[in-house]
Image (cartoon, rainbow, N blue to C red; front, side, top):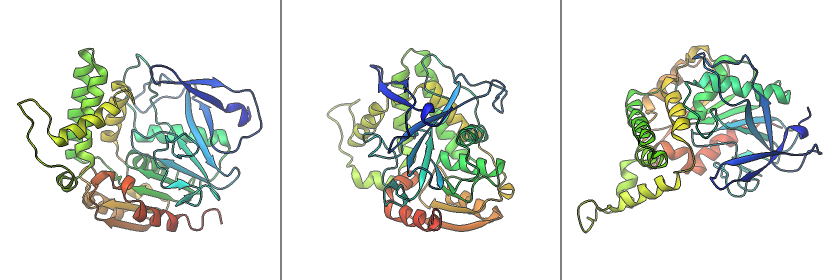
Length: 349
């Protein structure tokens, strides 16, 4: 099957789910293009489980034939990374753009959807960051890519990048890892554990979307800093008990916007995957650029420093302050952009 034969159009059904309609074979279109790789019948997760899905799905952006850069984000990110090719849905459009830090005029970018897929009625699976790296390898094999110019991963995507480097030390020329370490910190696991219990209780009560919204509210308090929330919101009491304070209105709005973005089963799977994450830094022979933020409570800077000290080939370690905590990789555009430009300076030249 050719790359053109492996693409499909997307349309959105009333529930918000994406319906994939195969295209007729055609010449490679300009702009972004979806690709998929079949998951072999004998593919098993580290847990021994099988995935319910039969394909892993990615999306190519940028100049065909250019050096390939893999980009992966947090558990709510997807293959839709670039704004102008995805009708405003790109999750990292400030970084991935023509003439941007990850320059689509001279590079090709592969973004991909983490497993498991959001499927009606599907249950959670026990999946690791190494499993996600193996699924990415299926896509790269399908594309016939022997060498990746860089794997740039942020948050959960950074964990997957580290796992990829451990499993496939020669496949990527370099790793750029932002806000991710070699392990999950116990305090962050505690917060995520509460989110998972909220999701489980809501699902058992027949209110899964309410569970997703409430878990998202709690998650937002861990992504940002107390300083940011203190600057943005006044402590103005509601008229009566049970009413919402201004910061609560903000969190409820964020939660409600996320209600149909995922399912409890998918969130349970990926949240648990973060807490299972464990790599041996000394086993990563790929050169690494690390970026950490001193205000990040989910990935404490001390964990980033330990990772930096243990990596055999550390090209650069940047630690920086930020008002935005764990979300700094999405908010500190100038700082992160400069680091990406420096890391990719020779890629594609």
